[in-house]
Image 1 (cartoon, rainbow, N blue to C red):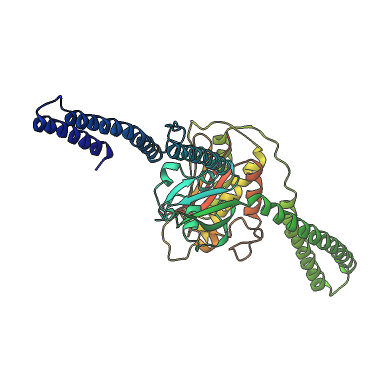
Image 2: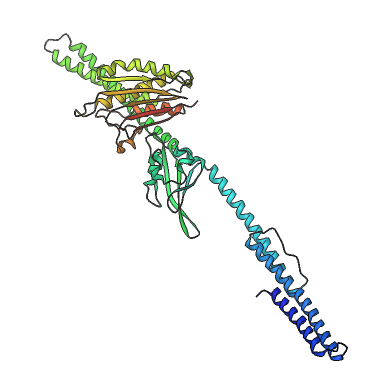
Length: 439
């Protein structure tokens, strides 16, 4: 029962008792009646004083509880003039000051952490307990290559349009892996969790290592190629000179025709080896691009005309589809033509390597799309998942006599042009090399 109601009942009881005394005594002038009425009046006054001294502090304390319930840490209680109650009020106000300071500190800390996550050069993906994407920063959006609407509330394994998301979904818990994608990008990904209210919230940290690894790879293979080219070219030059001298000496002698022919074969083989090494050296000596405004449609037209003969000999259809809305881009036309020719040659070789059981006619399509994209697609055997992870790796090739430098050359040129690119076989079985230029 509330104290206010209890005090009200006591007051009604005293009033009723005074009325009964009036009925019993009858004579309101008697001394006993006056004494009884005076006692009743004193009791009422005492109850009123006691009400003020007890209920007002209790009401103040109740208001404080309401403030705590509503988490209003900016309001304070006023003293009520009662010693014990004022001690509680002072303690309550001090506690509210501490709670307000702690809330501000936590809010500033959370805001700082949010700003830090948003500005972090590493991608951060936070999942719910059901492993659905709950939050991610701008760098993670850029790395995953998918809009935020397509990610939030979905599991990473359901985001088919992002190869990196599919790789993250396959990672083991609390592990770190280096993931190499088919767009030449390399990421160091860590899977971990943090405790929140006793629950394990999983999250991923994604660090792009492409530039660092490319620099390390380039530094390593440049040194090796230069050393090999120096030794081989010096040796080949001496051997070729000696073979030519001996060949010229024995050329007029009888019975030396077969020996001279063997020397010519050896000399040709040395020259072939020199050209072989020179191709590796050319990758190291890629010139810096001299950029100028180029029409992409005209660029792909020239490349198509150049490759038509090769495709005709291989019985492959070569088609061109241009978008008139494509804008001009700033590129080195010579380097970019060489890139497109290499891509087309790879497509021709891929179709030519199809098993004899394949009866469909080879087909290559070069297409441009606005604002500035080129896509080369072919219906060859495609790229397996094992090979896809090794694309654009120096000296890796699936061809029996391949040197593994064609895609490295393409990678180097496209990176120097700040292009985004990818090479993969889609679900429809078509292999597509996509290049998106910076406009």
